[in-house]
Length: 357
Image (cartoon, rainbow, N blue to C red; front, side, top):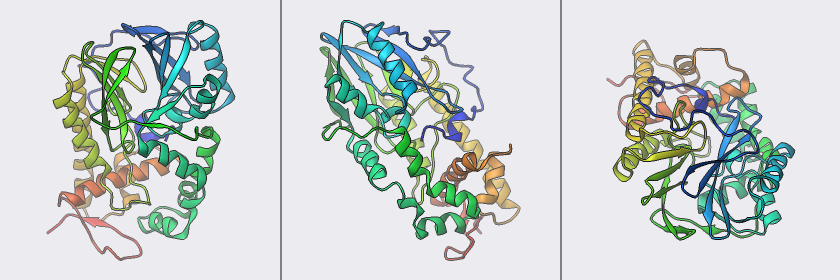
């Protein structure tokens, strides 16, 4: 989601190998052309990660919009300022949403209705947002809270995680009743230019990305960020899932599909050059975390909760702890799947992992 601790943790290399063609982000309510016919603006967020990048792509007599910001009065006011200011005189033609996290889809319903434009997104994004909106209290069911507690989470934090759907509702306006599905492998024509549609998992299921080969521009959403790592978490609805494995796999696929010298337009922070270096740096960051967990488990079996301080040594409030816990669990599941860890007693009331052998 928007306020996730994983995205606020700097990676080991700190992005020293990257080049940033724009020294500063555009001020709120202004735009900057980052490539021919592609504008960049920012929407503030009321979180530690305090912004989301929005891109506008020239589309005939108007602009196609990529992502929205959360649904609140401040975001609506920024969009009003944009359409009355730097975007005045040209319509918004369609809205493309990369994934269902509130900072990217939150204002989709309001924008589509206000500007009479269609919504384009993945099926997973649309249905994921609808599902949370229709059943915000689903995670409060006993099986889900039992899952978190069985891995050492306190009752307080388990309750917080279980009620996050309510917070989601406050950040997302009701979606349009219909959408156009985008699928990896599609070519999306925007203003006569072919954007290759890609998708990746790990941070968000079927997160969309777009590559404009003729300009060598890669709209990466949150999959590859310059100086922070995307949140990659295990959630109770898929307790044995391997989102980290999927995320690492996506980094290799991105390297194969996109040239090293592409201009990367990410969902947060500054556009940059150095895609392959950054993808390898992110993979190395997670490898380092796995080594830390392996060392801790060499000392003896550990629950997921007991491993959280290994990866997140600073004090965490309950909200931050919920994301740290779920991200730590992603590393544990990844290592179990690779045979580097094993569950000591899979049916125990308190589950712990150990080094095999």
